[in-house]
Image (tube, rainbow, N blue to C red; front, top):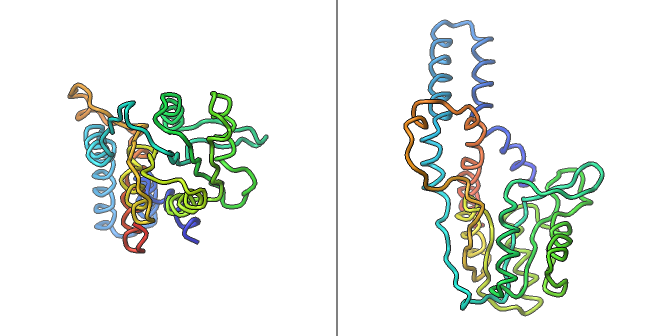
Length: 252
């Protein structure tokens, strides 16, 4: 149920969706005062959530700061969270957003900083559960020169909480001691870090896949609307709500 709710939530938290609902309300409303208030609300949402400067500042304040790790520091294992690839209708795997997680994991392994790689990710589909993301990532790691014996598969998790619980079970069963390097997107790391700590895992966060990073200030970001931001906000809103829900339910 929690998994299904999260899928529905990812759709309704998009500011563009709010505007559509308000437009529908505007069309069916008979009151002139209501129409005026709805129109003002739509304009405010459109201005605020299409502002590139506001979006960038919000993302950069929330996402985790980079972690510097020297080659003298080693870890028994890293935990790579899924959500970065998927399968097409022919069953062929493809990389998507967030594949920098895979790149960083591969790099750290070949540098000798991590000895084992835990791939945590099952199926993100509600109905089709046959194809598991961790299986695709394993094939790609082997193709990049990672030893199969150094790869540990956890392909049943569907959300961050299950990532943590199932990974801990695997690591405990294999008697692999921490601390473990946790690799996920910088925007997802604040929630992930709290969930994994709550699950009893001794982790060191290694955020990557930064959505925004420091750039030279440009006035155009404040003045010119960026319509794409009306959908981009869903990622930050989802993380904030997800963290609050996990905290309220004792998962973080």
